[in-house]
Image (cartoon, rainbow, N blue to C red; front, side, top):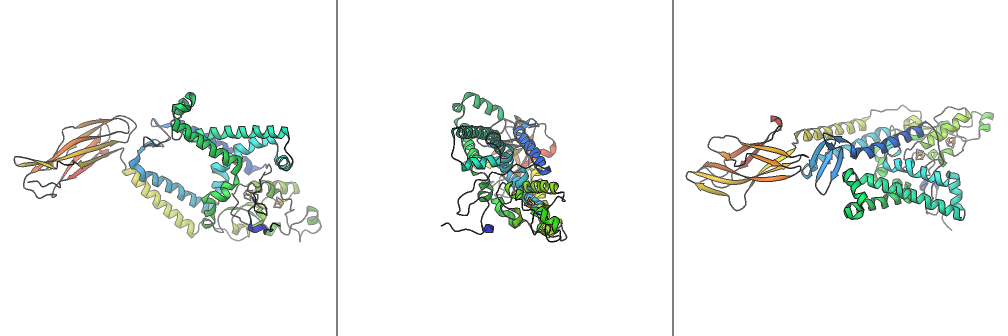
Length: 465
Ligand code: SF4
Ligand code: SF4
């Protein structure tokens, strides 16, 4: 016989024998549901439009990995800008830490793609074809009829189409959407690699939303597991006001004895609407994704009973215990300061970045030649154009007395995201000790302000005899 586990030691998505319980959350209406759905559709519209938006003539977001070209909010980056991307990701991750500390799992409940697509697209499709939660629960329990099989095939076909659509939206962050449209029109042979990625994304998205669902939040997502370390008793959370709600009792019981019966009528509406299957009245739980469905559900019940809303509400644990609440507290200050430092370093790094790179490299095997009383050190000037257009680079030696660069090519034209090497020489008087002099030249993009000039040094290691 299966051992019965204590309720608080298990997940709402598991049966007592450890097998998975398929969750069909009941429909809920209310202010949070309306606000969340509006946000979901705004976010989906933003995501779909982002690859089509152009800033300064460049895609707002495009990660062209094979060509190692990256476009972000009008800026163009290449593989040498890896440090910039590091700062972007670290800043986003740090913002999430900060937001979680202050406002709990608002990311999970309001903006995470898992929630947005599950609640905004896949669950509504299921509801449209198979009916509301009660009907779906009954269908799961009853033997399958031909009509039900047909409906389920329709649901899965629609889910698959939705997954394919989202997969192509994801791929359009890596392949320009116009090009992607051509690939789709000409079939898989037009770009087998793109096709395979789109197919793989479709499969993963379909499996996730058709089958895995809340398990992604409960088992896979590392952020969900981390959040207990990020929040404290002053972080905002979705919680149940135990002092007000307990002891639970029927509405009629409270009318008879208002002092000994709390406001919770134990209707379990907050439980049946929960997408992770938990009972928020058991206190804060890792499985709670902060979706606010239980707030709307309980507010609806309180409205009907003519009792104040907020028995389940957004509040801190201190607030739910009627203790003083603090928004500014040491960990928030420390996180904010660390975030500011990160932002500062990232901004300085970004501002110091040029849209081209110029380096002087020694020529292998031909270190120097002697000419009369001078010595010529051979180098190569390597220029990388990080812009998405053809640019001309002007090369100009800096006069430094007896040590100077000789530049045969003073203009180099480079196509978008391309590079070139040009021979340059450092000429010096013979007889100087090796390595005691540095020659400099300036590289500037034609038409760019003087502040965009790079000064390149060449330290001569070859003996200047
Ligand atoms: S919805 Fe409100 S009243 Fe009903 S069980 Fe939940 S907390 Fe109690
Ligand atoms: S407990 Fe409430 S807020 Fe948390 S996941 Fe369930 S319904 Fe959403």
